[in-house]
Amino acid sequence: MHENLFDELKRVLSIIEQYKKDIENLGSKKEGFKSVNKHIELAIQESEEATQKILDNIMDITALLNNSLQIVLKIDDDEIKKSLEENIKVSVNKLTETLTLLEFQDIVSQRLQKISNFISDVEKEILKILILFGIGRETSEKKKEELKEKLEELEWKKDVSQEDVDDILKQFGL
Image (tube, rainbow, N blue to C red; front, side, top):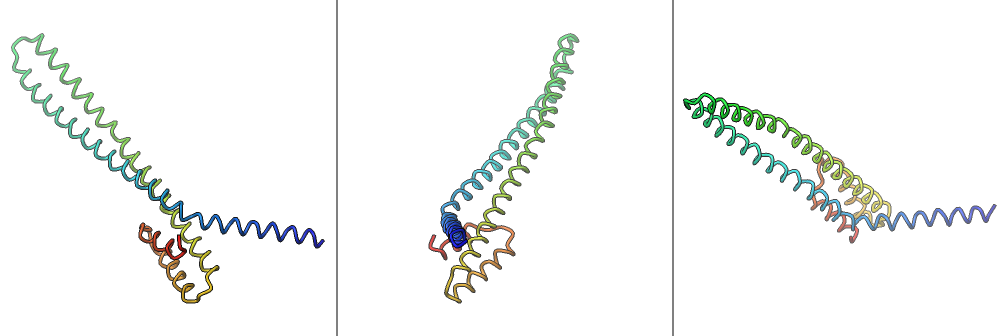
């Protein structure tokens, strides 16, 4: 009976020690969250910029084709006029279809934004765990109160800034 209890206590202590190491390693993960979010935000921005350029080009080409159509309609040769008119109308229709297909970009942007928000939420939860761990470990009442205030502040924040993350990790010497 005593050996089983002793073995169980050793196992629990081992789990606690591993948990402490994992908590201390969270500091190194902050750069990963920051980097992933930065790449996602950059992808959203570049995607929106590219889409805007494509939209602008489609609108410019459509206007040019419509102007060309007006000129083509003045041609006397009916066969040439009909052929050019048909080509221009097909081109305008293709551009309109392309414009409609660009709706995917908005969906991609929304999905990337959701991923970015999820990563921010995970980072916030990890910081809460880190603070709770610090409160339990801290011996100074003043420091405990500071950590509790930081936890309460974190609870009410929608987004956590990099400054918040650095400040919390600094309090743990990370």
